[in-house]
Image (tube, rainbow, N blue to C red; front, side, top):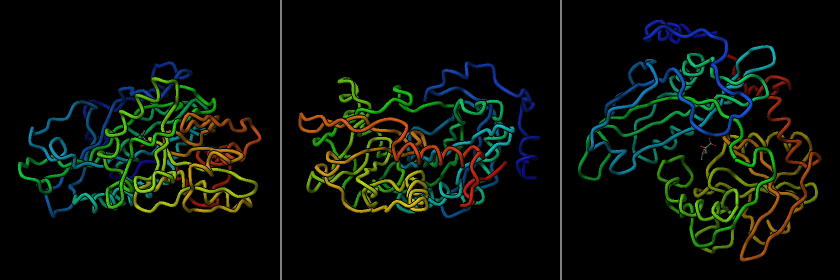
Length: 356
Ligand code: COI
């Protein structure tokens, strides 16, 4: 059900809210491309003020000053969260409060104003419900919701922007990788680094993403799915892939690199850690060397866009290691539990799911 604020925002939005059950697209072939949906949410604030009440409007282009902080100095953060449709038609969000908190932490790092947790979650709910006909049928994918926080005020000298815009849009998505659910082939790039100590690698700054495009394009050109980055000091410890966190399984122990400022605190990452511990695995968050990763029984990646993906091979320094794949993997067991919680078929004892 809609909150009173969401209902009034929907009433105020132009043109009339569209009521069809499903948009007319091919739900069987969703990848991770952008599909234009109906509505987006926008709210603004000036420096040291709180964000004004946001509103829904038709999805469309935004007008920006050429001197906007985000365009000139990259002062911006983004988030990713998803809405799922259950078999019985109920709509669920997954831990949107965690995205809100992560945005606040990122905003502090980037000297930006940020929306309250309540405003963030409400904006995500409004955007999901206004675009309900774009939420895929059960089992076909999800509505990927992209909150953005950007410095939109004009600024010439290097300092925080005088105005911020909080914007939320959405697109139906299927699998993130073109491989679909097939195992990923990852390439370890020891020339490019994603983040450095003291940098902004631990928050979801937009500035963490364009610099890895070169490494990704090179790896994709050679047939790999994504790149694994190593730490920039020792060039030895695994950090994360361009779009997801990494886990390895050895016996009954699951390990993942500790988030020590250079690695994104993934919400799927921490959910998988909790689920794994609850079903009896020992989970270690610590430094993981590339040699250890190459020796693992099984490797998988996690992320909002990616969900949980099996890694079939890793190539490092000219050597390729192939891992176990198949339905019996630990990663697959965790994936099925996570997806079951997200779409309402497995009891959510964690209180992670928000029905809207
Ligand atoms: C997500 O998983 O939501 C992300 O933000 C990763 C992005 C590269 C698609």
